[in-house]
Length: 88
Image (cartoon, rainbow, N blue to C red; front, side, top):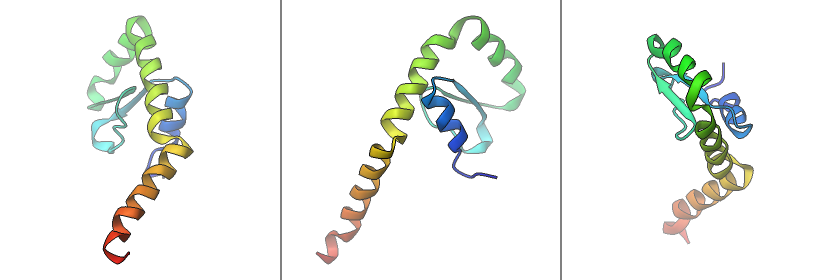
């Protein structure tokens, strides 16, 4: 069990669009498609036939810009600085 969804982010970074159940809480934005599981067969057919390339590009761009080590470190540093402002 993994609450964050590292496998989804790694897939997106590799340019693979990710399909997740809306109730999973893993809607990571562009390149990550969140729907009710009942719609998965239709979405998979659509991805295999026509829509994959724009989603591949969006998935990779989103993963690299929001979830790279540099992006995550910058977000954490900013949160830390904001939290420490009252004490400095």
